[in-house]
Length: 187
Image (cartoon, rainbow, N blue to C red; front, side, top):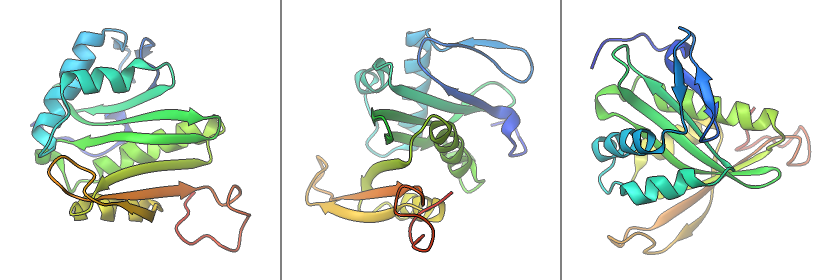
């Protein structure tokens, strides 16, 4: 991996699949190139996850016009992180995927990508985010808790390997009854 200082220059704005984007260097990127997008994300999650999604699962996650994608590339243009969210109601997004290349972890990339997606969706009226993760995934749990997610439930033996799933949520303070009780909530 090429060295790169963590900054928003390498982050691409949240996009709906099919949108044409330009990065800060004026380079266009067509997220509608479904094959390249699916291939790039699939390759990343094979590196990043012990039980990676298939290309079909990635394709399905990106298929909805309600899906949003934010990603980060290194200086060489290689995908090093991404977040996929899906608006399931006017004010609710489910985070379907957060992946960071193992060689790029512990640099704040996952948090930055997640916060960028959340900020963009909040600007569009979203005030609640939900996600799930495997019970034993301590680093991911620490990331989500640092952003303000709280554990709200658990699904026993949810994953194919028998692992439990933790259910997490983040609610904007204004949606949770206003200021005063901001435990587990973020801005």
